[in-house]
View (tube, helix red, strand yellow):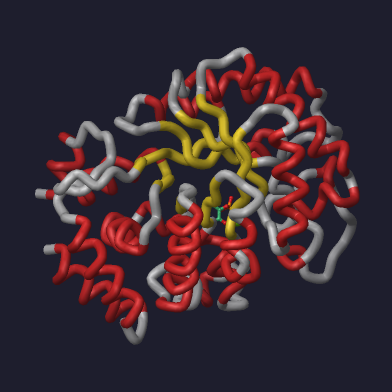
Length: 311
Ligand code: PEP
Ligand code: MG
């Protein structure tokens, strides 16, 4: 029945009683962005820019980058696009941003940390994003990955805003989640990357299938961090998105909404089932589901309780 509803769902994202939640797609290139734009979404909540450069041995020029970003922005029309600055290193190594051999790459110089040693890489990319934004109709937001402390957020927000763009950071480390109130003093929005936030919260490699019970996004400890970040967003009056895999699970998406998350971004193939599920439940049901998932002994118990509440 819900599968049929998914095919029929036409957006925009909202609960059955009209609580608006942006349903967005994760994209990585122009072809995927064009396909995603055919879905009833309100924009792209995560544009993974680094994935265009995995095979590049040298830094793409600002002009080259501008063309690549502009093609994705064009696909969005007038919608919102959250462009993520290069998330190089660890599971997404870029030859031109290689920081040398590290014993623990996931805990090494990756994401925004690379900008400390190579500030010009970030500046060039922000110049290209700003140039692409200037010639598109999209509402362009920019966020940095792998932020751990307030000074990183303050610095990157300044560099993004200098170019006239909306500035945010990803919440992917437990420290960022704990510091959400303070980060939000410096940025316009945050977006929770549940894939990495799980990895770092449970000290469990996101690539290790033998540890997938720990990186399960239904883990109550992960949801506690999401809850705390969403509450910080409410206090600040600023948007809190989720753009990790958690947002692709229709039942968990309802839990996230109940926790106070304001946008959900997932694979384009999942947006219809997420939007359709949300349209069948009230905000109060989402809140009850969130309470149950937080209080659950483990992911399986949380799923069972939430299924009953949302039925
Ligand atoms: C995440 O970590 O949840 C995220 C959305 O970023 P990526 O999966 O690209 O690391
Ligand atoms: Mg990540």
